Image 1 (cartoon, rainbow, N blue to C red):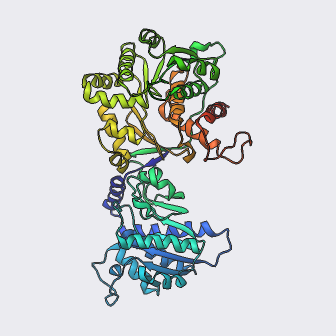
Image 2 (image 1 turned 180 degrees about the vertical axis):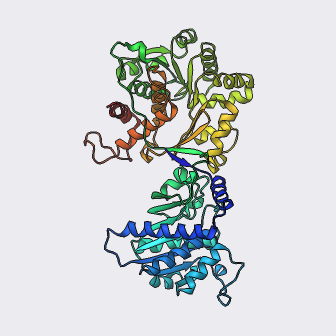
Image 3 (image 1 turned 135 degrees about the horizontal axis):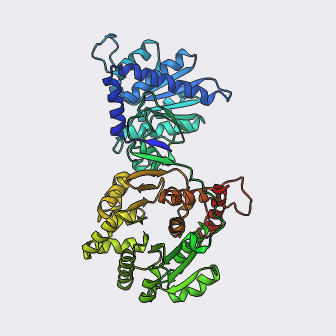
Length: 537
């Protein structure tokens, strides 16, 4: 796991370092020198003419850029520096201004040694192009303080960087954070950000680099720690590998590995049926190793369930007495996948969740279950409070995407997307339990520890993938022979993402290889079994 920090924590790490008597400009020099070494290493395997184009902004990130220009030039590189705005240029008449900031000191050093620089002007963009041929483009425009839509000048500069770098087929290196990416949240405004090939992350890994829009802009991330911060508690952890599974005991039976009850797959009058959701969840729970599966769905889909999964049992989701009785014998109830959103479905949801609480059964609430939970939060707050209290003592997992999270918090999707890290914590504070906030760089909040999933791909953005994930979640959760990590919500998310990645790899059998476009939820269970086997070897 890689420790992730929010921007305030990074500032505190630096502040603590300076409080010990360390010089801030010396740290800037060290940062720039180590960035230069990484840049040289990144291009040393290629026939290069050692040409760099370094783009600098106003603050300390710009100061890093000026020093990078200086050091590269001292090492024999041909360097051109592009300044975002003339406002940031110093009056060089007074070369020894004692009031200089670190960024100003860096600029003076670079310019004293005849640094070749140009001020970017949008109206002279074409004329500037002839001066900017380079093998490496370095982005030192904005740092971690960037948190709003860029100004017109900034947007033009970022756009020009991307344009020129593509024109010259240059390696694009971002210093700390690609300019335009919000380090705290991963947000990019209006698609305006540097598209880096490499991000050299200074001091500590920023949490926003691994979720939301940032994933399309960061390239490969390399850490340059610079200062010790082992005493700092990370805000989150980056996960990229699932936990291995121990071999099963020979003396066991199906009951040893848990009974999962899938509640969903309904058919609403005047609407299409949703039996596929329950089938996908059930097949994935079985692929994850659950010993026994029952699907409580509309009886119109029983034939389809048994055709797809002859080893599953079925029950009519509207047979409240039968379903309630079955809940008592289950280890896990996963409810909501294709349950429907009408008043009858709401009644079934509330009744079955109440029964699970009465008999201390683990719960997974997804999809339409989350829809009803949001309704009941206003309509029946005592029920929601009882569920929250139950989640303090028993395992309850909620698995929304951003739209469902917005409804649960009675806000807009845009509010969730502005800061997914804050949103998932708000959900847990309000409803209790463990949470998954699905999306690019899915977030998992489990036992008050926050994780970011580093596996998965855009091919998983298709219908039914959430149902598959709920099934994997339930299948692992039901197996009492597994330890806490192996049964965890984060393990389910990792398995799901790893299976999706396997299906898009080029070095797997052609019969499995699908690619991101056209990847379907029904492709997943077989590969989930493969991942389970790989993790058990």
